[in-house]
Structures are given as C-alpha cells and as structure tokens.
Length: 239
Ligand SMILES: Nc1ncnc2c1ncn2[C@@H]1O[C@H](COP(=O)(O)OP(=O)(O)OP(=O)(O)O)[C@@H](O)[C@H]1O
Ligand SMILES: [Mg+2]
Picture 1 (cartoon, rainbow, N blue to C red):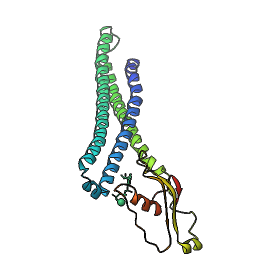
Picture 2 (picture 1 turned 180 degrees about the vertical axis):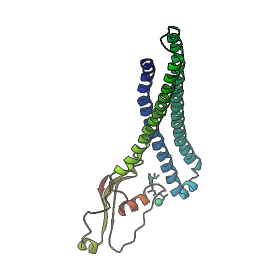
Picture 3 (picture 1 turned 120 degrees about the vertical axis):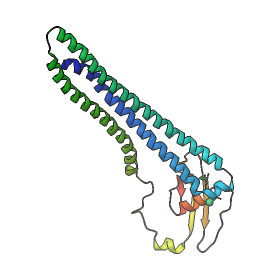
Picture 4 (picture 1 turned 180 degrees about the horizontal axis):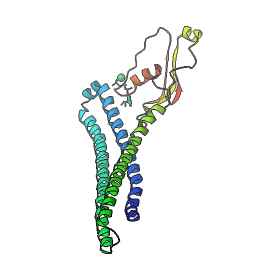
C-alpha cells in the first residue's frame, strides 16, 4: 500500500517544480510591469505642467492603463496557475485516499488486511499527504518570492553609468578659464531608447557670459542642462 501511495504521489512531485518555475516567471513579470507603470506615472507627474499645457492627460492615462492592464493580466495568470495547482494537489490527495480505500477493501476481502491495520495506515498516510501538500505549496510560494527577489537583486546589482565618487577633479586652470564647451552631443534617455533627444549639439559658453537656450517644448533644453550637471553622460560627444 505504501508503494501504491508513492506511485500516486510521484507524478505530483514532478509537477511542483514546474509550478514553482511558472510562478517565479510570473512574479518577475508582475514586478517589472509595476515598475514600468510607476516610472511612466512618475515621468508624467514630474512634468505635469507640460502634460497640462499640451492637454495630453488622456494619452498619459491611456499609457498608464495599458501598463496596468499588463500587470493585471499577469496577476490573473498567476491566480489561475495557483488555482490549477491547488486543484491538482487536492484532487490527487483525496483521489489517492479514495483509491486506497478501494484497494484496501479488495485486500480485506482477500483476508490480507484487517480493518484495524488499514485504519492505522490511513492515519499515517493522511499525515504524510497533508504535510506533503503543504510543503509543495510552500515551495511554490518560495519560488514565487525568488521571482520578485530577482527584480530587487537587479536594482542592487545595477552599476550606475555615471560614477558618483572618484574621477578627475576640475583643475584650477580649467576653472580659471571657465569656458563651458559642449561638443557634438548625442543623447537618448536610458528609459526611452527610441527617441534621439540630442543630435550633434555643440555649444560654447565663455566665462561670465549669459546665454539663452530657445526652442520648442521637448526639443531638449532641460536635457542639455542635465548633461551639464552630469545627471547623465552623453552617448557621444563631450561636456
Ligand atoms: N526623464 C526622462 N526620461 C525619458 N524621456 C525624457 C525625460 N525627460 C525628458 N524626456 C524626453 O526628452 C525630450 C526632451 O525633453 P526636455 O525636457 O529636455 O525638453 P525641453 O526642451 O526642456 O522642453 P520644455 O520647453 O517643455 O521644458 C522630450 O521628448 C521628453 O519627453
Ligand atoms: Mg524644460
């Protein structure tokens, strides 16, 4: 009867890692989706005047809704996956109990097993199955956490392209001359690689001169200032 129980449980044991792998992938997708939605919202809120001025509220909302829907779809997939896993586990557990009762009845009719022996076996088996089921669902949860942990680890392991310590300090002579030169700057925002914000921009500002950057909204004026402040490094060219 022990072999009979194991024969039923073994295929389920193989199902656990498959479920865990799927949950890990889904949790990672959900974390990435939430991060993408948050960064889109943050960009819109931090430039809310521009959004209002160009009446693009609906477009921004639609963009956010799309990202949010993606998270919802992935969360629903995860819920379905969890539901299916629980269904299989419950089915196997109670199904195997039924099958065992049937098998025990057969052995009893053949006088190979007493009711007392079967009752004690069933008691032990039930404890075993219950704990096995709990363990399998805990393994699934733990693997799901690994998916989220992978997203967090990516942030911890991220190496900034602009180093905030070290480097070469501005020499006294350069500071004395005080000329700010931007030569052939090329730049795209890391989060928006499809838009070339600056294309071969060169500007020279002599010491104590005041200049104005003039251009249509979104042409890249603030971006130039951010490159001067070294919030980003240019893709090509030099500040
Ligand atoms: N943090 C950011 N991440 C991604 N894209 C950005 C970011 N900030 C600006 N952009 C994009 O870069 C382009 C240039 O923006 P920038 O803010 O430099 O324009 P601007 O000339 O200062 O506009 P405005 O006159 O409205 O202030 C725009 O297409 C804008 O959507
Ligand atoms: Mg600006």
